[in-house]
Image (cartoon, rainbow, N blue to C red; front, side, top):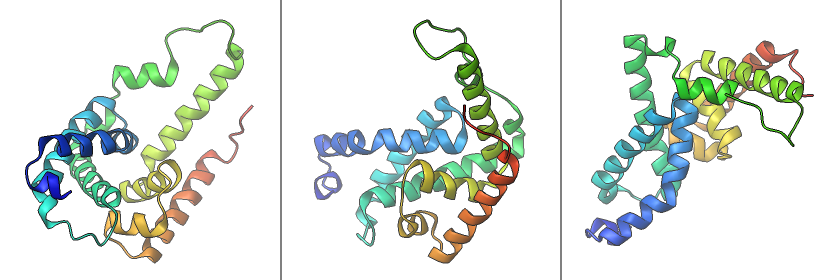
Length: 182
């Protein structure tokens, strides 16, 4: 970090290389669009490098970067909601959810279809959650952050994180209650 603050480009490249994949994955999960996630990751690292000198070390660097990524995703999500972008589906997202062909030597077409349908239902259920609940559940269940790390990333009390996770899980159970993997 000190080398990054001092302007060492190789240290900055190392920092990006170490954290970029997780930032992109988090952004993809929060925004549901890989291209937007790639764009958002650029914004995140610009913000990281602009504010790195103010990082006080009260959390891990990874958690601090997650906090920046969540805030950037929240801002972008608000922008989309105002412009009704959430109603659009990207072609990449559609192909990822539904596929464009079957390959041999793999699972049966029925099983592939059932898995894709379940994945689509889960994605739809996550998309219907309020952004704050979706963010908390993704940070916990997908990215594996602890309650304390999530609390820091979202600038919340641990109790609030637990409450949001409980409400998100209840909503997902209600929506997906009859879904079973085959």
